[in-house]
Length: 333
Image (cartoon, rainbow, N blue to C red; front, side, top):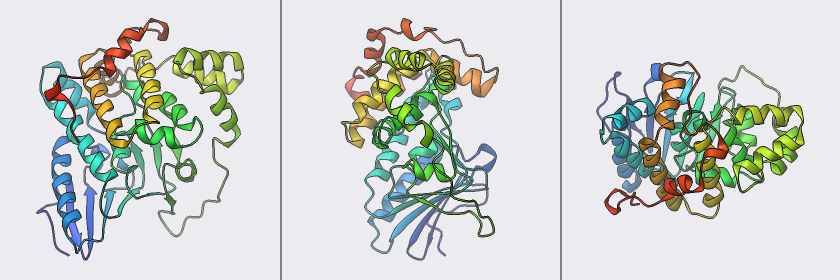
């Protein structure tokens, strides 16, 4: 075993070459292996070295501990930085998306062992790779609309490709998939038990009873249309989801739906460039900072969204989110 990167136990990410394999270990178990900028800056150059090394046959990424693969990006630090004009809010998203693109275009097999919580930034570190291996402990979600963000890290690319309207449903509601359901949804490519001693029977996909409703009710060009579909349906399931959507950032819901509708016809690079614009608008606007405050910092779970209703979010506001940045600030891939 040779260490490709000098690293002690306290390192946030451990990079090693074992025989012909590169191994990335996210090593922040107390923070559920959340991804920060310094980790990105260590992973990217090493992945480039491995890709160009004829002796490296594959790269494997995993998390330390049994709770999380990677519970997300360090959005708290990003919103704090955005408040004071610190460039972290530009650099974090830019370098994270460049890493996501590297994973999506990697020249050798890239295998993510998504054992435990896999959300946000953790999805970006896994879903664009060759193989994603879920276990019974995997918990997948893209819960960004609840914090005034949107399902970034290439969510606009992979979510519309899950089949039917499943991706739009997962993106708007933040619904959590667990264990085998992560594989059955198409998010993971494989499923294995984390331990040979456990035996969980194979059950039907948790959303199977509602696939017809998802495809019908989440088929809309606007969030208002989807909400109207849910209201008209009137079932307990639809009503529950309508109530849930009413608690999300209205601005996030609108930019997320447009992101996925447009992303379905884009390649990964185009999606990431679009999402970089959205990330910078979120950092400049109100809801992202407010959502992080309410959900992650003060944890009162009572965000005050501005605007407060879906109907108040104008087309002009949504267009501004998608509008080009100054040329020197755009994401170049």
